[in-house]
Length: 71
Image (tube, rainbow, N blue to C red):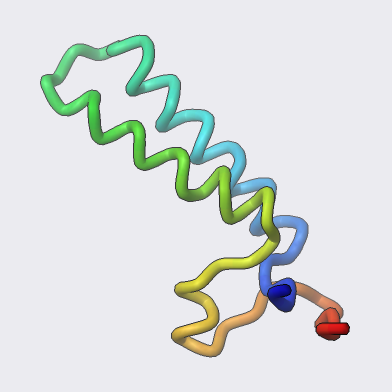
């Protein structure tokens, strides 16, 4: 399918950021009126789960220490 381009540290940071954003959206603390933007946290969680980031592909980036082969 896709070649992995997200490394371990990058994956952990994406999970932490995604969970924090979703908690911001769900709990509404602090109530700013922009809490709906927290649902963007789904994107870093999805890319961390897949191990592939389409933006990294566009910019030719790769944080994975060992490039996996498509097979």
